[in-house]
Length: 199
Image (tube, one colour):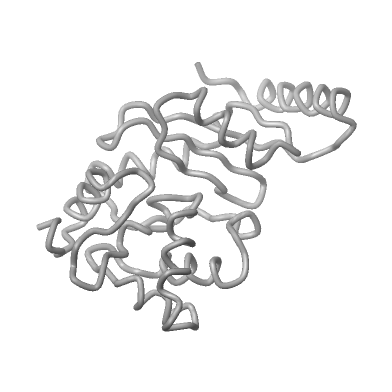
């Protein structure tokens, strides 16, 4: 059930106030939403004032809440309609009406150093194209750091939006993926990418 803007603001004030009383800490609220009917299963989304900071493949809302509590335990969080634009873009993506996104990512919460450079380079890969782990490591500034690039991609907290599924092994095989190889293969096939396992 959707809430009106005034109701949402009141709920956020209550949640933030309760968080301060319980923890003694003041943090800006993290808002989250669930998508349960996508072709790749259930997705959890979370955003702060600076943009999207989480997109996870999960089995349940409870699992997603545990993950964002683990990552953002210093902030209050609540379910919110403010993620409707993100859900709309994802719905359009899954329907084949768009293959890239206009959503803002909060890079301040997305790893750091070389790992962030890897994800920023990955975010620039157009739909339908793939790079190898070595390719994306080179674009991030260190061609010899393909293993570190793989670790950064494995820890990508904003899947699909930062399209780590577009990174494959140098022989064209899929390689690993946080959502699992079947989801990676589905995403690449959906985008028209040509790899050994997604044709």
